Structure formats: structure tokens, C-alpha cells
Image (cartoon, rainbow, N blue to C red; front, side, top):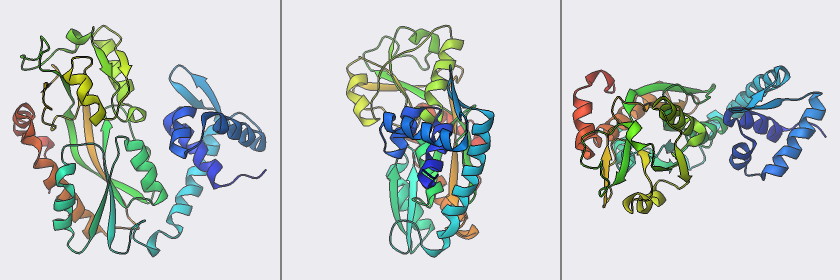
Length: 318
């Protein structure tokens, strides 16, 4: 068996997610099938590529060399025909991705205004890792991605980025009947006995960030549920669980959204795009459209609106 492109993507996916299971989901494979493929690749290159650690898969010295070369090959491959078409959609269509933010309601309109003549196709995805992967493969032209403080999303040429919001706090949502619901802000340590819904985009570092913050507050969070953002609403409203949320989301019926004291959870927003798909002028216009969409929703939650007005240093530079 010879190495092919799918093997290179598989190895990179395992390095980026730190998990065979998550890499298999990204590649559309079963976990046993990916494990078998990994063994075959290791036979070809003549050594072990990954070892398991407490934090997940870690590349060996040989694995690091293979991953570096694989990324170079994939980057060249992805740009080979990048200037011959405008993404997966028809000519003139901008393939845009976005993490699950309140501003998705305004993105298409604001970006269309900023880029007249371009039809906008929007993909909403809780995982910034998957959005970055779609950009690398040329399945998207640009994306608005979120990154937790202390973590990163691997991006390589021809993908480039510009910071939209350098830092903003992540809030918590809980049932309106919760004893803490009336507080202006909630201490993370007071949530030690709660059942948590796993944060979206766990492979981006959001779950690891939650665990680290809770440990610093003196407890290990009980992550009892895994649910897409919308599916979590009934659990929170019924008082069965709590979850972290983007601060610009308005509270759903029967729930409240509150800041966490001391801002133990912080993220940033980046605009990422393929420079073989967008000219510098178009990228600037895209940035302005996304900035307008985000700012339009900061007042959805009055608490976040107050925070935003008191922190002009984080406002998009347009």
C-alpha cells in the first residue's frame, strides 16, 4: 500500500484533534477503520507516529516530521486549483463559515452589503477546528472563528487571519428558577454541584478550558450531557443542566444568561480567509461586514452590552 492524500489528511486530523475518535468523525470514518489505517501508515513510514498521553494523542519525533511534511503537501495541493474557482458554490458565491454566534442572524445581510454582487453561502458550525479544516480544503472561502484563550486553531497558507475581537468573556446560562439566577454575576465556584452540558467545539479547547477553570476554582465539573446548541435549551430551562454560552445570545424562555465573576472563560474572534480566493480589498470588506454583524448583536444581552461599552479597546478596528 502507498500513501495517498487521505492518509495525509488523516494524520493531520489526528494531530489537530488529539483524538482518534474526533479525527475519525472529521474524516467521516469509523474509529476502528481509522486505527487500522494508522497502523498501515506506520508500517509504511517505519515507526510509531503517536503515543497516548493524559491529554490525548501526542506525536512522536517521527510523527512530528510526517505531520510537518503532510501539511506542506496538503497546503500545496489545496492551492493547486484554488484560483480557478470561487469555492464550492457557483461563480460569484462566497462560501462563508461561522461559529454559533448570535450575529449569524445578520451576517448574510451585512456581508452582502459589504461585498455587493457576491452571493453569500453560510455554514454554521460549532467547531472552529472543522471550519479551519474546511478552509484548508477549499470547501470555504472565509470564516469567522472563535478560539478560547490559551488555545489555537491550526491554520496554514493560503489561509490568513485578522483579529476581529481580541478578547471577550464567555457567559453561563441556567434556568430562571435557579437560586443564583437573580445575581448580576455568578462565581464559578458556586456552580460546583451543577451538571454541565459539554461546550460546543470541544475539539477547539473549550472543554479543556472549562475543566481548567473549574479546577482552578476548586472542583471538577460534571459534564453529563452532550448536545448541539439548540438541543440544550430544554435541558437548561428545565433546570437539569447549565452551559457556557456566547455572551451576545439573548436568554431563551425560562433561562437567564449571566457573566462569570472574574472572567474565568475568555475567547477571541478571528476572521480567516483564503488569500487565493479573496483579494485584499475583498478581505477588508468582508471584515467590515462581519464587524457590523457582530456589533449589531452585542446589546442582545444588556450585561454584555454594558461590558462592551466599557471595553472600547476590544472593538473591531474598521
